[in-house]
Image (cartoon, rainbow, N blue to C red; front, side, top):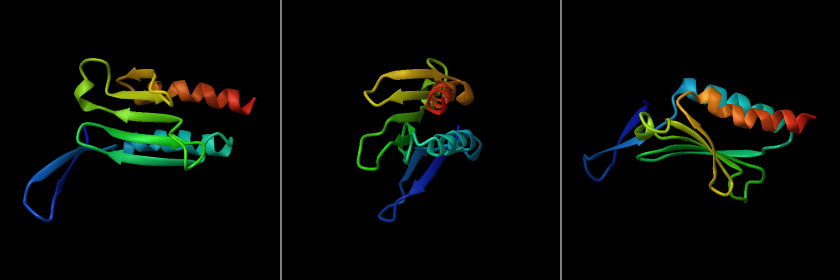
Length: 114
């Protein structure tokens, strides 16, 4: 689990944030690069919050995200730490292994190239 501690300048309280580790970002960015090359995705955003880290992908910058790849460490022992969520909030895949969860988006890449 990769949690980042941040201090505010006003006081010495420490706020914890969930973040993607470099080894987690590598397969996400590899998939992102292939989808950009296929013309399916154009932009991305990363949010690090207290309980979740989110990698959002967009077709156009001004739109809502097409997909969100989420990391929720609190769900590790229940549903799985990683999830791919669609534009309308539906959970497309959830699990413990990031590469298998990203597989749901890999199938969309195969369709895009055909």
